[in-house]
Image (cartoon, rainbow, N blue to C red; front, side):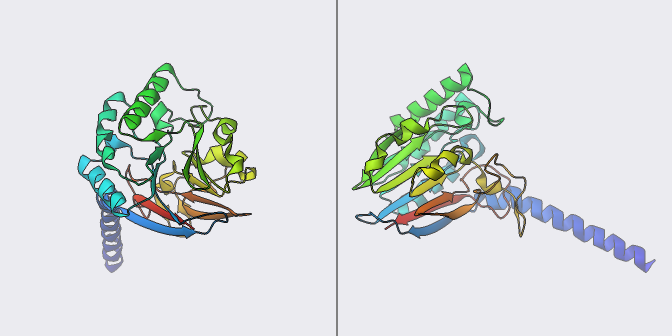
Length: 279
């Protein structure tokens, strides 16, 4: 009988533990905004440049209060430039108005953005050209961001500091990325930064001499387990190599994959505001 009591107690403990984990993953960690700070030394940098990077807003799935908190915490970092990594909406035109809260973002050099797969209604992976409705959604998302004073880079680049160029590549899953156009003219700059939503788009960049590549898309898996990493894996031919945090690619090249700020559940992968100082 004692054996059955012990078994029953074990089952009860397991059920309670599972319930607590679910409550934490769905209701607690998704609201725990983390700020990750990294300093990267790059040859050719004239003056230190403070970048704040956020991605994967998915506005329909977070509250206005949450977004206001993100904006306040980003601005409190006093960034030189703010970079946005795509997936501002989750699926629908009606969500675009929710982005107005982001209009409060402030940086000395401005706010630069790229689009993500959800901004094109692309949620099924590579190989799907954007539909007419997807293209319309992306145009309207882009117009909203630009209307708030942000610069949307769609296979374009811009100088963001003395000797520093930022290239922004359009979405890979929607088949809108054009590496050649995005990189055109960047070779003359000593410091080159590439901003792109999806890690799968960066394979050509590995031979492109980028000093810093910034990506989103994976949400760091949303659910991570010790010694295992993200569950499930969210990448493609990059073999889940760049899904969470900082990577030194060698030859003066660095990559940072931010966890994004929206979408739950989350377990050991909290919403992330990434602060990178290049010097």
